[in-house]
Length: 135
Image 1: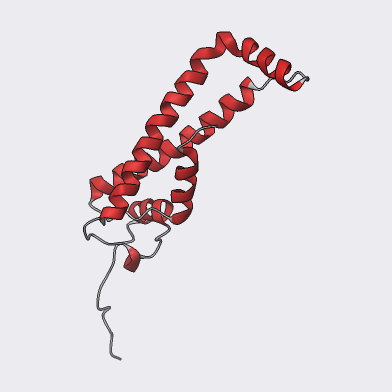
Image 2 (image 1 turned 30 degrees about the horizontal axis):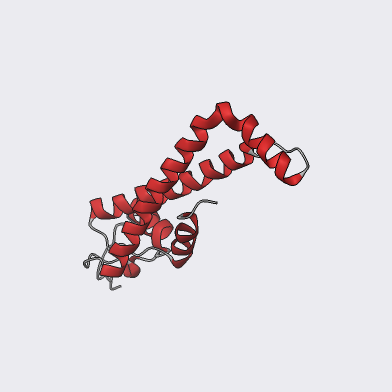
């Protein structure tokens, strides 16, 4: 009986698969590339970095105005006519958006560290573009 040897053996590289899969939805080995990152993807990385900075500033602002939450709620009460505590939902939404953008930023920096081509998924591009202008 003849035994055939496989032509090539690929190591699974689960960490790299998760990294490129979450960041750019490229889960297969043949979709990953060590080519240089395109200028458009570098521009998206810059936009992602700016969004990260703005979200960090916005989160810091809402975290530090905790003494003025009541004043903010009174302002909204005078404008709308009904009382609601808006400070907590705004703070929670800001924290969730910051966590999302920070996660994308970490994945992008990991792409740079391992030398993979950055290819941000279109859904992440839309969401980071929408998060760039808070409220």
